Image (tube, rainbow, N blue to C red; front, side, top):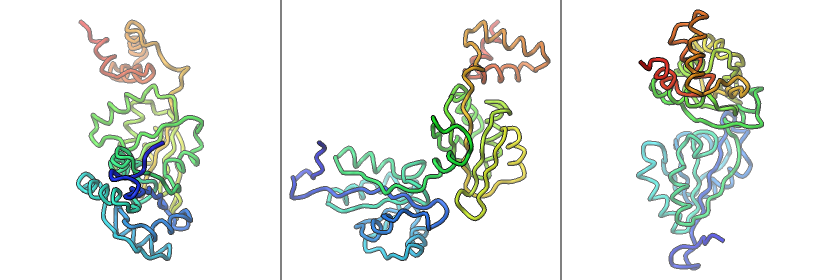
Length: 289
């Protein structure tokens, strides 16, 4: 059994770290326990203290504890301070702008630090953009993986997507609205324009929208402009469509496609996608002197 007491023994018990999920759209979706945890916390660590104030107003509660900011820019510096509060026996509640803390949001560092010294970590379960998007996407949900945000740089993004070419599980991504078109275009390049996906925008909010269809069609739609919070759900690779990864088979597949009229670049990209290997690997095989 894990020892949840401090270094001086039972007389100085550690506090508790509570990861509290917050609504991703409507305040009415807040779990009932959220109000009680916020109002009773010794310390509330918030990604955005202004959003926290709006949330407490919506919930009709007042905070009795200390409020501190805890966001990407100060997460490293502030974690030791919050850890000290926990070690002193205080109850620290962590909230982010929306959804569950530490899921592509601040929180992981504090959780890891608390676990390392034996502090109890619990959660107020609640709204999650990942699960909500997956549920409404209409895509397979029996097996899935969450990939967070794609790299912003085109080259790094392409390499990440190429590494997922053989992933058979449904994939869930977060994306910024102004990068959605580029992300969908990169997915279409790596995985093919026919791969089916769903773009979930402003989930649970007034202007909620779910666009479903092949990646090629979604790229065209996103080209008209995308606003709001975006979650992208994409079907996994079809295992029956995979090519052999044997070098000779890869070269033959590229040659076959070139003979059918594809450019070498297009042929290499398609073969790499279907075989689930990096494009550079196929390129090197084709261009061996």
